[in-house]
Length: 76
Image (cartoon, rainbow, N blue to C red):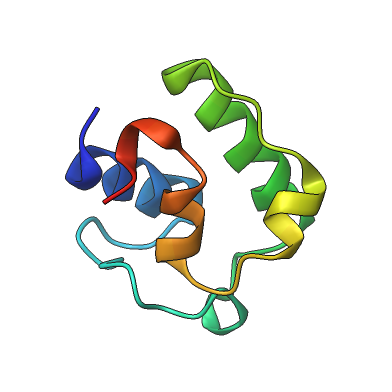
């Protein structure tokens, strides 16, 4: 999965129109970024990348790019 596919999955997870998320968006500005989205994000990364994300790592994320950078296969 590449960056665009990852963003597409995140669009779906957050129930925003496809192509909405680009990367620099603040998580605090996303209406559907909540505890359910956090659990869904952890599951998505585990399912698609076989990579575990800890709640502590997520707690340090401020932007969509930060979420993307948690996945070793997607780091820029």
